[in-house]
View 1 (cartoon, rainbow, N blue to C red):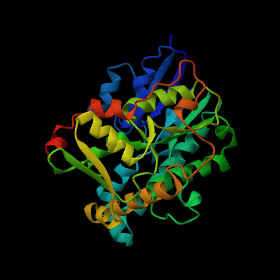
View 2: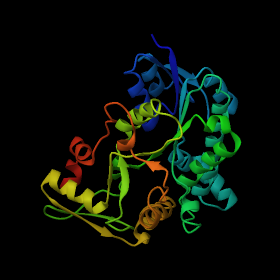
View 3: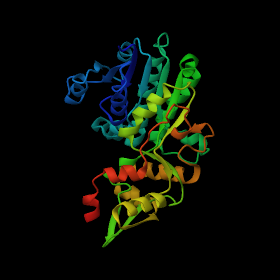
View 4: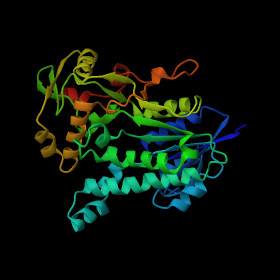
Length: 332
């Protein structure tokens, strides 16, 4: 019988959906999913699978407080890309004479702080708060990287959590989400065919710099579940592998029997290809190249460092690449 309750923010998204899938396999846990509109098909999918769905909005703190009542664990995440892409974001940016990125960061920071404040009200029953986040770009780069805003809004909430909610911080573990293995589907690191059986990946960073990459849909859940089994205070990097682009290309080549190499591009290529967001991605890749994905934070640990019985199963990059349909990419 379920005697523990995990509340999953963003259950209809990649990260939250993975968490729900994992905890559905643990009958001692009950799941409560949070989304803005529980009548939508994506929400109804979870209702039919026995998840308690509750309408709540990250812009409405009181709705979150109610949704978190009685939680044993909370998984919290925010979605910069959706906020950045919203029509009202572009309109607000134009009205204020700033970029949609800056509006997106403001909105994400506000939502993430609302999430933290609401989670703090659940302390009487709460045992673990797992917050999906990214590293302190401006801090670790000493102010050199200024436009990696999808990191900055998330980290602002961590700073708020540490400074304003000591009791909640004592029950918190951070889950830094590595580069999405699926990002190639949006075009940033997709191999481009340049000849018969020859492909190139181009980005504005070195091919030798290592970074964490993860299959978010498969692995966010197992990592979150593992963080409920170990003491709080972990700063866990979500990763199925820690590798470079040269190593990624070598794996992709081996899997497909072709030749794929990496070339370091000028950041302007990305900026021209992706208005607004290209500049942000270019700053992110510069940050990874010069400071590391976590900025060199000495407290960062990896899934293989967790002391969990049987270890934590994560998806390696060869396993991920073999599981995807690359036929359109291979055809060029």
